[in-house]
Amino acid sequence: MREPSVATAKELEAAGVDIIQFDEPAFTVFHDEVQDWGVAALERAAEGLRAETAVHICYGYGIEGLID
View: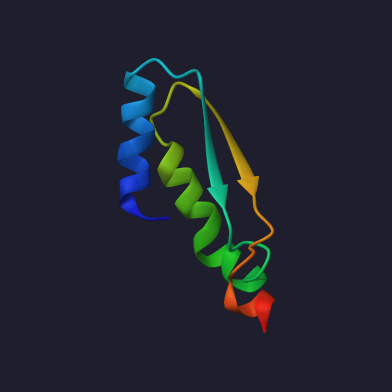
């Protein structure tokens, strides 16, 4: 997850948003790598947030592994 996502989540919370949803398009394609970096990235993105968080695991349309 790119660092701007973390900053954006904090900005949204500061603006009064109650629920923040993170969209993740790659988990369905890179199954093995998810355990290496995916969960940690989501935890880092939500760290320190008081707002409720949710994760939407996208199907990953447009990711090379799915369109080949």
